[in-house]
Length: 92
Image (tube, rainbow, N blue to C red; front, side):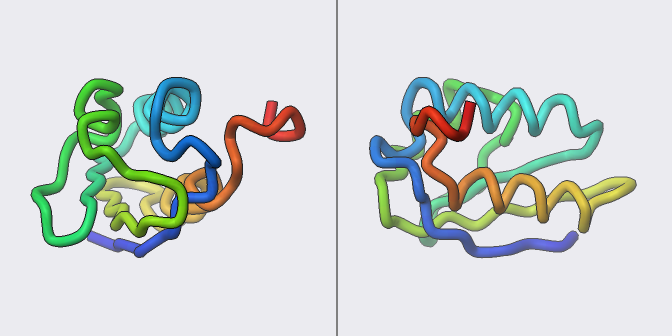
């Protein structure tokens, strides 16, 4: 299962809108996406409640892992999302 550590780029962290956009992309990918903060347990990347419960703030690192067809491609897309400020107008 490929994985990557990413620094959260959204100014509010993975809360509300950024978490919604990430989980929607994870669910639409057709792969199994897991997200973990630090040494904590990995959660379902398609679950907005679980992703928000991680409490990942701006500048903190999370580890994304993806399993399934196109795993590397999906991992690239999701890592780019996490590193971006998803609350910025340009990200819309």
